[in-house]
Structure formats: C-alpha cells, structure tokens
Length: 159
Image (cartoon, rainbow, N blue to C red; front, side, top):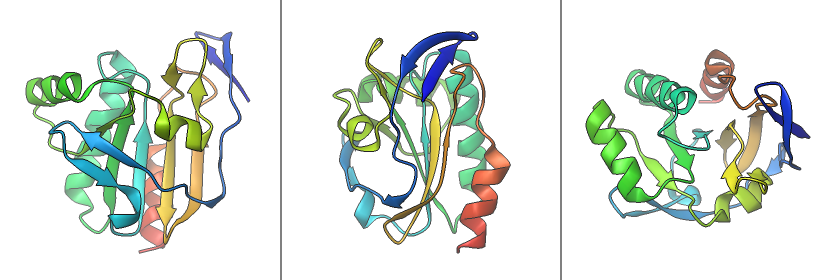
C-alpha cells in the first residue's frame, strides 16, 4: 500500500488489516505499561505519526471526545512521540485519554504500518474485539482524517 503526503508518494507499507490482533505492551504518557490483551473489548486504536501536527491533534481530540461519550468502548491512541511529548500535549489540550508511545516502532512493526522513510507510523484506526481485528482503516493520504463514524459504528455494533 502506498502512503502519500500532500498527494505525493511518501512510503510503502504492508498493513495487517484482519485476523488475530498482535498483542503489545507500550508505555502511556504517565509511564504506565498498557497491554492490549488486558483491555476490555471492543477497543478502538487510533494511530497517528506525530501529536504535534495539526491533523494528528484533530484526530486525537476527536477520539478523546468520543471516549468520553462511549464508556462501553476502550480507546487508545498511539504515536511515535515520547511519553513526555504526549503528556505535555495532553496537559496543554486538556485531553485525558490514554496515549501510548511507540517510539521504537514495536507496535508499528507488528501491524505493518511503519513508514520506514520517516520512521513514523501511518495514520490508521483499528477496532479490536476479543483479540481479532474486526475493522481497519489505513489512510492512504497522511493529511486525511479517519472515518470516525465508521470506527464507532463497527465498535458499537459489537458491544
């Protein structure tokens, strides 16, 4: 799959979009370890390259609002930023959702979404239920926002 940035080819990835969701453990913005298999089902995972960019900020704020409105769904955000960068952004924006740091691309490699040219994660959304990927949206254009409603619909149908 080709990922573009501002309509120009940027990277090629081979994302995992169905089947067993690889388990992972990453640190959140408070340095706590969060493990996918220990979270309730369903879980929405919002992935973005850099919290300090405009589209990533919009995506994170939107899923933070949805997390507050949908307590029956677990929400995670994952980026390449350090826990400190994420904590600073959350404090400045008043966001309280769990954001995980994949600074070493552990999650990104498992899910096939590392854009090697920039060492960043491709913008994507996964819905996980009972250990299975039941929905995946990998954004082909880095500057586009995900289909929030579709991810919420799929997660809500499976509660």
